[in-house]
Picture (spheres, rainbow, N blue to C red):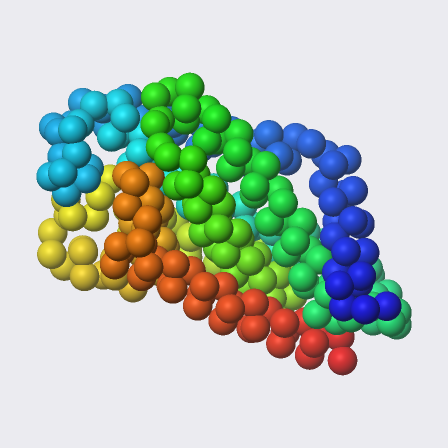
Length: 259
């Protein structure tokens, strides 16, 4: 079997597993929609330009052009980092061990799962964007399509890292607190809810270590109709670089685990 066919084989199996429990998809998108409904209206009351660095016109459109990209990245962060729990269960059930004696590519064991996670995130993100339109989001179609590119790159990187870390730890008790202790600060430092420019200088400096801040800023620029300025290009480079590094690290773990 080729690498592509191996990846599709693993993807189909993983997709069947998630379709047996569709509640996973619903729960995954429910939290950001609640944020959209309960927190979004608060942003519409902020003074004009607060969310867009002084260049916006204020109101509902500006608020949701700011908020929806942040919620999309939050959805990607939570959805992609917690996927490692599934592979711990498979390892404990002996499924990973059985794969070792098959001709399936060891890297495809990772990429097939990551492909499933990417497809899941696209479906959930589409639901969230449609909900945003209902609340008052107004953004160019090109910006929405570009946001999928960022989301796919984030999902590839974080899912790869999540599976690799989970396969190394092999314990939900160790994996859960580790994920929470990393993801929550990343969300806070990425400016999902409010722009980091509202914070003190020291907090803005710390926030620069989060790659997702650059990605969120780039998505917000695109939603405002600015596709190829310095912020957007910087965010795209960070997204591509982060995805490539984390996918490489995840592949190394899977190859060594299944050697």
